[in-house]
Image 1 (cartoon, rainbow, N blue to C red):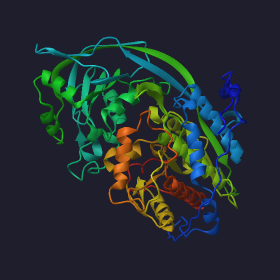
Image 2 (image 1 turned 30 degrees about the vertical axis):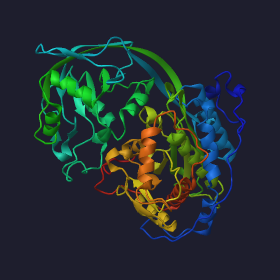
Image 3 (image 1 turned 90 degrees about the vertical axis):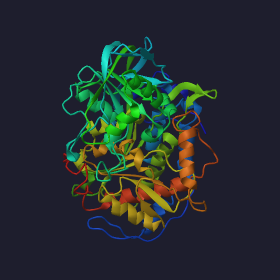
Image 4 (image 1 turned 120 degrees about the horizontal axis):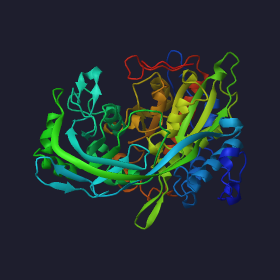
Amino acid sequence: MRVLPVVVLSTLSWLSQGCRSTSIAPAGTEATAAGGAGGSSAGLPLSPLSPEEARLAAQITPDAIGTPTRYLSSDALEGRAPGSHGSQLALAYLAEQFQRIGLRPGGDAGTYFQRVPLVGLITEVQRPPVFASSRGGGDVSLRVPDDLVVMTGVPEREVNIARAELVFVGYGIVAPEYQWDDYKDVDVRGKIVVVMNNDPSRDPALFAGTRRLWYGRWDYKYLQAAKKGAAGAIIIHTTPSAGYPWQVVVTSNAREKFELPATGEPRVLAKMWATEESSRRVVALGGENLDALRQAAESRDFKPRPLAVTLDLALSNKRRDIQSANVLGVLPGTDTNGLAHEAVVFTAHHDHLGIGAPRNGDSIYNGAVDNASGTGALLAIAQAAAQSTPKPRRSLLFAAVTAEEQGLLGSQWYCEHPTFAPGRIAADLNMDSVNVFGPTSDLGFVGLGKSSLDEVVTAVARAQGRTVHGDTFPDRGSFYRSDQFSFAKVGVPSVFVKGGPDFVGRPAGWGKEQFEHFEKTRYHQPSDEYDPNWDLRGAVQDAQLLLITGMRVANAPELPAWKKDDEFAKIARPR
C-alpha cells in the first residue's frame, strides 16, 4: 500500500485550502453474493432484494473494507488523534477516496472538509488530591491515575479547589418522567458530588430495567452536576457499572482532551473518576459505608448524603486551539419533487486516541477496530452506492466525523451546523467497530424498538437469512456512546447494528467471549491493531445490510418516524 506523500501536508495548509487530490491506492473490488426474502411496511419498501440491490451488495467485499482499515490503522497515522499529523493524513486520505468514488464535496467552500474547531487541554495535577475528614478523622491522598483520574472542566490555566465538601448524590439523576430526583432540594453549589455509575436497574418499570439509558452515562452525570452548580463530580467506577475496566478510564482520559469552544453552558471545575476501593476509603473518612450508601440510592426516597469529607485539589492546564474536520461526500439525489434536498446520512468516526502511555512497549493507539474498521465500511458502502442505477431519490451523505472519542464532538458539530437540516435528514446509519470475527446468523440492533426503521432493518436482515434482536449488551448504553446519539438529539432516527453474537459454525457463547476478550485486551489499547487473520465476512454482511437499508430509506416516499412513546419522539426536526 502506498503511503501518502509527505509533501501533501508539508505546509499543514490542507485544511484552509481544501484537499481534492492525493496519491492513495484505491480499495479492493472483489465480489461476493447476496440474496433472500423480505416483508412489508407502510411507507417504506420492504420487498425481497431486487437484482439491483443484490448487484450493489456484491460490490462490498472483505478487501473493500479491509484495505482502508489497514491503512488508517497503520503506525504511520499515529492513532489519528485530533490535531495530529496522523489525523491530517487520515483526513486527506478520506477526501481522496471520496473524490475517487465520485462523491461531490459536501464541506466548506467546495471542499470535502467541514472545519470543526476544537480546544485541546492537557491537565496536570499540581499536588496529590487530598480528601480530609471535616471531623478531624485524618485524610487520604489518592494516586493519579492508579486511584483517581482527574480532568479539567474549564479551559483555564489554573483550577483550584480548596476544602470543597463532598456530597453523595446516588446516581445523580433528575428524571421527572420517572418521579426521580437524586438531588432533591440539597444545595450542592461549590461542592463535589460523588456519583454512582449507570442507572437504577432493579425495577424493570424504571429506567428501562437493565438497559442503560443516557441517565446512566458519565457525560450525563457531569452535565447534571454542572447544572446544579457543583464544583466537581467524582464517578465511582466498577467494571460492571461502566461496562469496561479501570484501564479504559485511564487510557481514555489521562491524556490531552478535546472539547468544542465554550458557549456559556454550565461546567464543573473538575471531572473525576475514582476506583471502587478508593471511593470506599474516601467515604469511610466521614464514617460512612459505601455499600450502605449505594443500597439507599436504589430508592426514590433517597436523599443526598453529606460525607463530612473535603477535597483539596490544584490543577494546571495547557491549552491549544486546533482545527479538525469532518470529511463529507455527497451522492446527490435524483428526485425532482424535493426529495433530492433530503438525505440519508452514513457516519463513522475517523479519530482515535493517538500516542499515549506505552503498554507492552507500544505507545501508538492504532484504533483498528475502533474505528478504522467503521471508516473502512463507510468507504465500501459509498463505493457501492455510487455505482447504483438509477441513483437514489434522496441524497446520500457520507460523513467521516472527528473527535468521537472525545465525546461525539464531530457529529455534535455537524448536527449544530448541518449541511442538510435535521428535518431533511431521513436517518443516520452509523458504523463504529465492525464485526471482525466472521459471518453471523443474527444481528444486534442498538436502538431496536425506537423507530419505524425497525421494519426496514428486519426485512433486509431476513433477506440475508438473519434474525434481528436488540443490543447484545443492553447494560452498556451503546446507543448513547456513538455518533447516532448526536443525530437522535436533533430528532433524527438511526440504525446502529453489529452482527452476533451467534456466529456461523461456532458454539453457543463463542461470540460473546470474543467481544468480551476484545474489550479486556484491546479496547482503547495499543493492541487494537489491524490483524490480517480477521474474518471480515461478518463486516461485509453488516455493511451490505446498511447499504440496502439506506437505499430503501432514500427511495421511500416518507421519512422514518420515532415510535410515539420513544424518548426522542417529542423532538421536532427543523426543516
